[in-house]
Image (cartoon, rainbow, N blue to C red; front, side):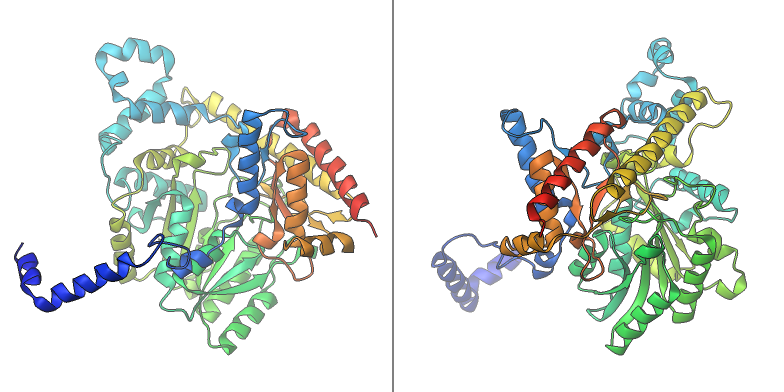
Length: 511
């Protein structure tokens, strides 16, 4: 009130205010436009939700209004790892616990006889325990996440790796993506700060770097060696970037890989840790697909934390952030937005800054936190829900593995297409050698050649994939990424549509 009186009594303030009003009154149109918005946001791109998915959604809406308007009756969204969108069944125990936490009235004594007939005893007990520690799911929690759940995450990490984990070094997040964005934001001191990202990469990384104005430092995965990672490639990327004055600070690695589906060997992980330690580079380990392992006998999952801890005191100062999520694995609870990251060997003052950053958003959503709890602390042998839990989990896993093999076989059977098998994750990333006429047609349409192919596939079949240009690829090569999440009983038809389209496309543009 006092400030308002001072301003209105000041002739200079009144004159400036009148000038601003006069200026605005002479301008036509909107104040906020693509010309006046934040340029860093405008420059960010996110291919898995880009032009092709937008067109796919438009077609999907069109089919609802007029089912006969296309040659197909549904759009198959293979552009994103979203299992339940393609009718993957939720794990029963997880949903039972979540529903009881959402509706604690069911746990009152007067309802117990009815509830005990609908819910297994261990789901009821888990919900009661969580409500005791959570309170209401509609209330804010601790900014780092509910302490009880962070304790369970720490126990999960200890059991997985065989080394201690501190709940105070764990932050629960809105999916793994929020954690990645938060850490990259923390690492970016100025526009000269460089983050190493794989090519191909998940566009979360390039988009986040664009939005914080950091420098991407690409390193290439070797397609001819199953999308392997060699240290020479890393060294070359670092040396070239630093020669240009880039302050290379961190290495982001996705294991198992997205979009490529590879799974790193333990020795390869050791080499990467040695490289980062030698070059003074922080490790960002995106491990959200750690249970999507389809060749466990030959390519098991090894966490970066476990390998780092096994390498002795020489590496005790190597900084590591590792990320996990409830969206992947056999869970597929993408919409719950549950995740966490663990901080290893991070400066205590940076931990305080991360806490401050988390506090600005108040807390991660509590339903997502509950899903993290049941993911990291599922039913065990002897629990009433264990047989059903194991059966559901195994059924999803075996189906994913069969679909991965079937789709790779489909792609490898296409003319001018080659595809590595999926060792992990939910995707295949085949390379396609496009005819010169198709490349020319793409240029005429002002599209990347692989985007031209992917759009033609969508319009002809309703199958939505993401062009490799959205992930990055070796110059002169063309790819696309597809999930293998469509329902298994529809898979033969799904593969058949792709095969028929591809033959027609190649015939149309054949030299």
